[in-house]
Length: 210
Image (cartoon, rainbow, N blue to C red; front, top):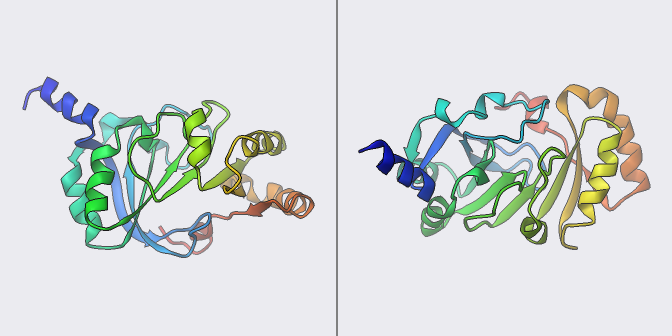
C-alpha cells in the first residue's frame, strides 16, 4: 500500500489510529457502573492542560488499524461500545459505527464536540472545552453534557454550555481529578442550589478500575 492510499483510507475512516481498547466498567456520567468495551482513538489538538491521557494527543504514535479489526474485537466482549480519545471526531466515524451497528451493538461516544459529528450514535456524551468550542450541530444531539470543573470560572462556562444543549440533555458537573478535594464541596453546593445539574464522579478511579 502506498502512503497516499494509506492516507485515503485514514481520511475515509477505514483506518483509525487506535491507542488502546479494553473491556471495563463505565465510570462516569449517565451509564456509570455499566460494563462496556472502550475504543480509544488517538489524535487530539484541543490540548486541555489537565488531560489525563496526553499520550493520546499525537495520532502518529498509534497504529493505523482497520475498522473491521476494531469491530471484530469489540463484538467479543460487550453490547455497549464506548468510542473515546483523544478526540474521536477528528476522524471520520461513519465506517466504524456502521459496522458496529451491523453487529447489533449500542454505540456511545465521548467527545468535546469540536469537530463535525460523523457516525451513528445511540448516546452522545458532550464534554465541551473552552479552548475549542463544540459545533452548533452537536448541542442539538447530545444526550448528556459533562462539564469538567477545574476552577470557579468553570461554573460560568458550564451554564453557558447548558443554555445551548437540547432540553432533554442531562447536565453533569464533574470535578477534575487533581482538584477533586478542593472543588467537590463547591460542586455539591452548586448542584443543591441549581438542581437541574447532577454530580458526576470518576468512580473507576476511586475503585481502581482501568
